[in-house]
Image (cartoon, rainbow, N blue to C red):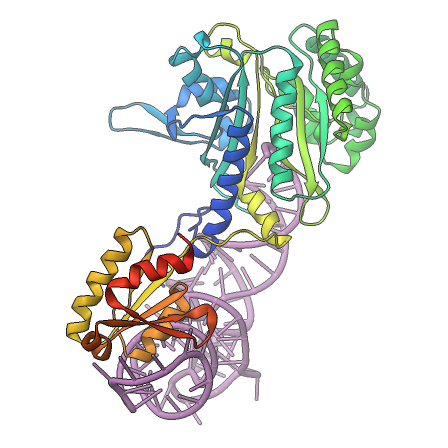
Length: 422
RNA sequence: GUGGAUGUGGCCUAAUGGCUAGGGCACCUGACUGUGGUCCAGGCGGUUGUGGGUUCGAGUCCCAUCAUCCACCCCA
């Protein structure tokens, strides 16, 4: 081993895994564009205050998972722990409120969180993110959910379903939270320590506690969907109506919550058959309060994010076949100094004709052919003294075993082009 | 942040506390400038994760530390 090793929780994405990344990036990007989302690329770091405010001071992310530092100019900087805050910042800063609504944006890229690494979980990882900004109507929620769904369908994920809930809005949520806290206080002796703490810091979070002792308490807890105001109720009903209309399976899950204040109304996850049981593969929801919170005009929005490492992990586990990355079809084998000079001319001729080509750089004929076999493409072109003398090149089609053809040197490019039908 | 398991060349791995840590894959060289994965010969590559300790002697036992994996936590 060398002197230096990767920082904890980071990974090298080696050439042999690139086809998965390329495939996932291509599929998600294609779907997003198809659905009218436009790509936006944002800085990987932002002002720390943006995330502190946008994600929420009391969240785990802000409290202990951010990569924050001071730059040489004394600015407080944080490597983005999620996309939404940056998207909203860009929306406001670039005056996107003057654009026709909805504004539909997507992003892909690295995300940073200081967490304990685990299978499929890294400190630098990657997300796909999509947002619909500027529309209150539940059609926007549906649009985001459909994109999430279809991305996984396009990636051939099995057993897809939605988990769905509404978290209400500033009008109806406080009353519900009060009710929940009162209920929990009556059962204070039956719940875990963490939940007791949550009651004061972030009450909604008690609902997704995994502790065994908390389960019966959760099961009988008041459900927020029974306490929605009229606007939230109408919104939720309409969204469910669309899903019913489309026959998309969803489960009402009153335990599905986001602990952040700016989340409103719709909260959802897509579940799929993962490694073993069903598991969430992406999550999202509506955040009508965030843009105003970050200094913009009051603007409704809804979005979701998906972790690419998790997608790739499931794809590899289920042995989903992904297309190979293209390799250059031509590999030139050369013998002798004179032939070598001609060979480099041939090499650039192929490339000028937009046909991928490589040249053997070392070794005997045998070992060059062996290299052609393992690293090269379909055709091995042999250029030695014999060929040189006759102005020919010997072409072996590696997909055809020993079949070889002698082609005049100046027709080689045209001959190969014809073979590959370009 | 909590609990558990595991660390031997790039990868896989052998070695009752006892010879210079052995083998396979891969890589390189040769056989071999003239026809592809075989075979043959040779080579490069290790302070056994790191640091201590026990012992005449440690890859092996003990402690610490680091890393990885797993389960929590959190989430994507």
